[in-house]
Length: 344
Image (tube, rainbow, N blue to C red):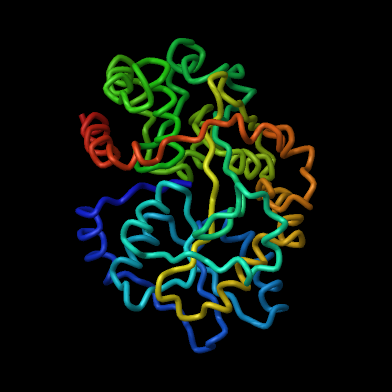
């Protein structure tokens, strides 16, 4: 999940560029939900699992892959005629969407599976479909299991083998807020993080644009460690690669992922059918399996041994949930400073 927050100033710039790149999505059928979904594992899983369930409910589904920042920019470029009926986002992006009046509160009575969600997953702006648990991926053939973030800087076993993304990545920024607690005065003390990278220039060399890029480098054996979600490790394992997941000793950052109803959505009934399918036992029983291994939010769905190896239901409350309001206030400046640091 490599998303970044968009401020009001950035929205204007991004929306201008997005206006020319908004993909044409066929909407001939009034009963078709156009659902923005993260590319990769999410797109594959939602297309194969949810499409038939939505059709059973009498509607069609068009899965439109886009990262959250692109979803926001494209909707902002055409707020009166949004290209998507639903968006897929974590709390940082949801806050921006609410502030800019891009999404609307839902009517839970339209979701027959709503009662199957714990109250924590019943968001007023849409249901939580999974919780992404973040930590550290490593290749056990190349490096020992790290205890946490400090190890990556202090232990020479990892020198030159760790990759990072910039502050545009949700996974990245969640890791950096935790590192700021360890090496600085708190989660927003990014000066401590920037100093850490300056003192360890080999880590700057390992900065790339996205988690997808990191996964390619990992497959090629060019890196042995990167910050990721459990889903990334599940995909690597499904490809037959040696990959393990570590929950940092200071705690695993986590982000719920929600489906949101776009303000001005054309096909509201189809959108609700899609939401309902996403939180159904039938869908989550499939999406909990490799290669997706998404943590199920429907309480009727039992966890697999593979998911329980990462996190159990009773551990959800003890995960680290970042302060996205604080992140959103500072993120644009953090991106600027970090990008300048990496550029030299």
